[in-house]
Image 1 (spheres, rainbow, N blue to C red):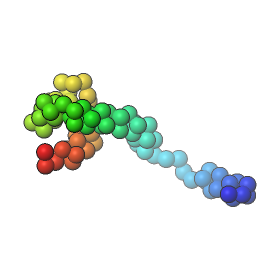
Image 2: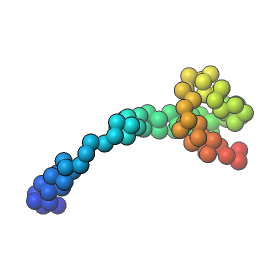
Image 3: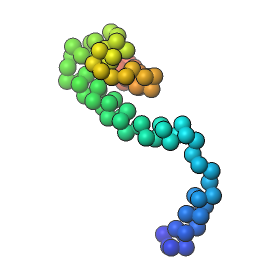
Image 4: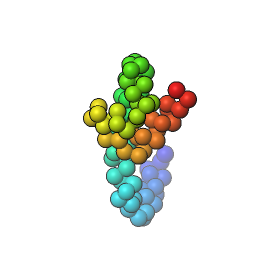
Length: 84
């Protein structure tokens, strides 16, 4: 990309309105949420008893283990464990 293209791109981006605060917050929270999700799935894959507890009562098991059982996390875990 030439310097002219980069300058023009910067100008166009600068002309955009700011992102909604909810988008900014979601972008900030996403890395932690993915880390938690990966951690829970890895533990469930390694620990059959933990996996059974998650499937039996996802919200209670997560809360008992110190996770905040929020809707996006619950939805993704239910999707991943569907059919288990």
